Image (tube, rainbow, N blue to C red; front, side, top):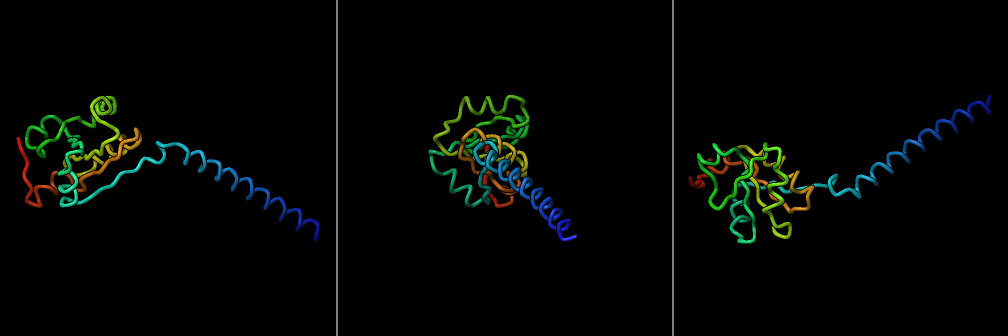
Length: 143
């Protein structure tokens, strides 16, 4: 009976060890992949306004052309994140050595854009709440 319990314990221990090693390998592979670590900052309106005041910052509006034409933050460049060539367009004009600020209407699409750009090696800051938060804070848009 004692031998049977020890055999079961050893078998259980071996299974747990195999699972632990597999998980550690998967995490290790993910950590070495920059796309897995794509990260960006989401900031409020006042911090975003201060951030984009820096002339080194590249400001990107990721909404549609119609939304952009209705009003956008001064100095913004438009690239629609829903365009299938978004990453290619962005990487053709952005300097990866300079910070990038992104925004959309509510912050959802710009968060997606921020993830895509971060995965390409860009340092990205997202406007939390998007243009809606910007306008609610009394900030101006240009046409």
